[in-house]
Amino acid sequence: MRSQKIFQGIAMSTAAAAAALMLTACGPSEPPTQTQTTTAPAARATSSAGSPSPEASSASPATSAAPSSAAPAAPAPVTPALCKAAALSAATDASGGGAAGSVYMKLNLTNTGSEPCLLRGFPGVSLAADNAGAPIGAPATRDGSAPVADVLLAPGQTGSAVLRYTQAGNYMDCAMVDAAGYRIYPPEDTASLFLPQPTKACSNADITLLSIGAFQPA
Image (cartoon, rainbow, N blue to C red; front, side):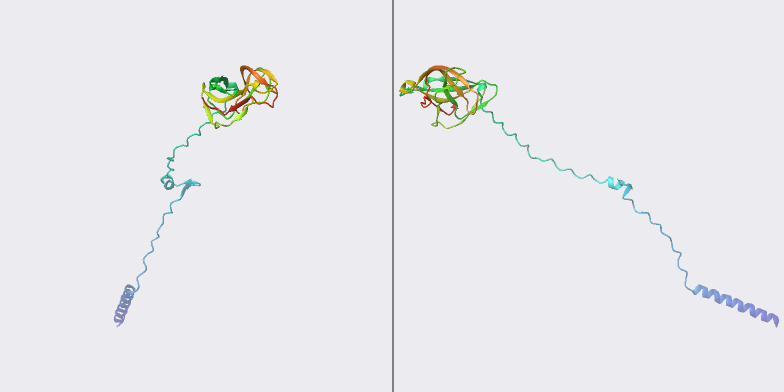
């Protein structure tokens, strides 16, 4: 009787264990173990403070601006200086003839310098007692019958202006004196040339014996 009870107890224990095992098998499964993922750090923008990263330094360089195709501006032409007395010689050509007691001649100024120069406008002309003397009487008046022109003189070239001399004897009230020649001031120059050419002059300044035109190419 005792052994039967022991057997029943073992059977019940076994059944209980079997039931517990079945409950365990039918229960919810454990969640899968979470896998830890390690994320690599983002690439650094710079390899060191203030230094570009290798990726940045390998970028294509900026395209330089294309050179301008415009041609350089041509230099402005240099205008020759006005002719000065120091680089000129003077002469007259009396082939112009005369009329009514007057003599027409060409007053020629020649460039004796080494550079081109310009004659522009009217020279100043008067009769003079000598090379260093003061003018005698009235200076030449301007004759505007020929237009003012720029006369470019290369070295050795000549410009001409028409000079008229009226005979001093034509004037009854002329205080006649001897003149040794002409004092000539190139246009816009304060220095002068002396052209020896003895003639008669009127010392009184109210009588005008000379007139001069503008320079023209010879």
